[in-house]
Image (cartoon, rainbow, N blue to C red; front, side, top):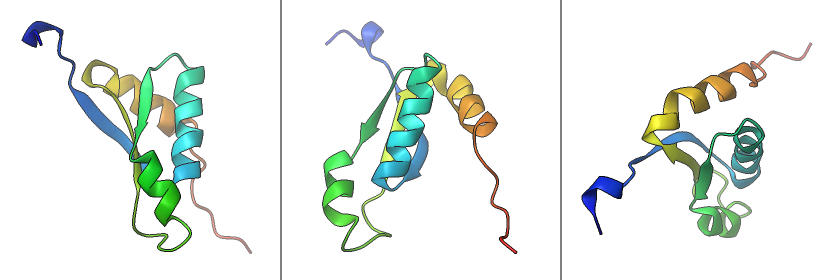
Amino acid sequence: MNGANEEKFVQVYAGNLWQAQLVKGLLDANAVPCVINDETLGALTSHYAPNVGDVYVVVNEADKDRALEVIEQNTIPDTPVE
């Protein structure tokens, strides 16, 4: 493999499988290429151990800032329910 063509991937999100799929859809809709890592592990363990088996959304290092911007702009802040 030629070192000049290797891309470095960075994690921009970690959570359960359905959350990661939502983030991936959001990034895809905003033309930010991404993939979900550990999808199978998250699917297998989420019902038995919700805190184990996080899945990760990763992007090319060059797209990291844009991905984080898109995620931040579309995240609903935690608000207490009265």
